[in-house]
Image (cartoon, rainbow, N blue to C red; front, side):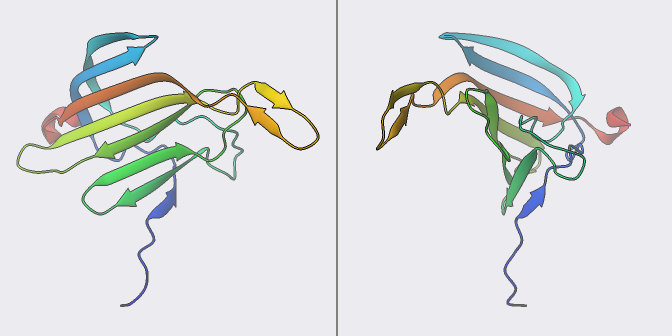
Length: 141
């Protein structure tokens, strides 16, 4: 039709993918832990950010091939936020691969004068990788 694809949409928190379970590896403070992800309905990004009733806190970019990029609409100074990339190829064995990065940006002021303000660089607070498998529809109802 010649119209550009609209890949952006407000993140409404709806569970888009059904019931999933799997494994998660999490890095926090230099240590890695592995854990089992119990069956759960996945919800879109739990990105933090100021929101009111009319404005969702997060956005989702849906790309061809089952790729979702989720991020907060706003980043408050020195407040941790989560950025997430998910890939759902939905082949013969439905899988969802997710990577979540917890960052804190706009930290403390390092230098301030009449010409510039220099803030501490963003820091990585946590990183998680999940490999999830979709449960059969009979189990998810």
